[in-house]
Amino acid sequence: MLRFTVATVTFNAGQTIRRTLDSVSAQTYDAVEHIIVDGCSRDTTISQVQAYVERNTDQRHPHAIVLIREPDDGLYDAMNKALAAAKGDYIVFLNAGDAFHTPTTLADIAAQLQGYNQSRLPAVVYGQTDLVDLQGRFLRHRRLQAPERLTARSFLSGMLVCHQSFYARTDIARTLPYDLRYRFSADYDWCLRLLRQAERRDLRVHNTRLTLTDYLAEGLTTANHRRSLIERLRIMARHFGWCRALLAHAGFVVRAVVLK
Image (cartoon, rainbow, N blue to C red):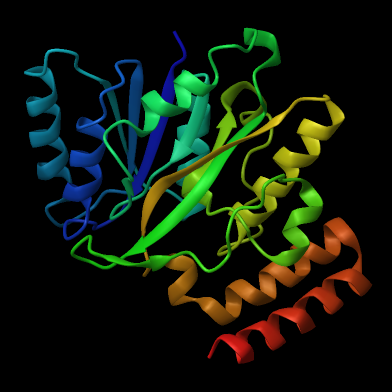
């Protein structure tokens, strides 16, 4: 049976963590490992996690829950800890405030992957994303839509697949930890490197054609938008060269003006 690792990184996430915990708990699929990496929160985050653990043990088919609580060197360092600990076939990062789009999201993905031999499972599985507010209410579909066919070159148009709707094969992802040189856009670099690895290994990238995630609009990258864009330009130049990177970012500026 295919197993999923859901990784949730938290720090003082008391206002938003409950929706994420409830969303994982509500999944109808049984083979789920939930890793929570907390950077020593000082609010109600841990008490809510402890209550979640207690509720989980009363369920008919409880999920495995792993709590790692220790200081870290930022978001992506904490994500690397989750990568190192993950035991699932696939890992997805669902952070505080984010939620699965439906209670059957993981079951629906597993059903689509049934025909694959274990060694030839797709390197990446992906889908669409909806944006929600702090109360979990729908705001809009994500403006950058996941393409029918996703490759590394797709990311010249920006991060077309939201990180929370990007499922990576754990055995591959563990060999490609997040690059801690980047504070705000290491997820962009990570997705690119995974897609490159899929090409090298001749592994498929599977489009579920489903909306997978309800994403909280106000994340770390959103709050640090300018610095994130500068980092993304550097990452794009590293992967595609400065000429393509600068041309792509000129296109982003035009797109931003048109969408205003």
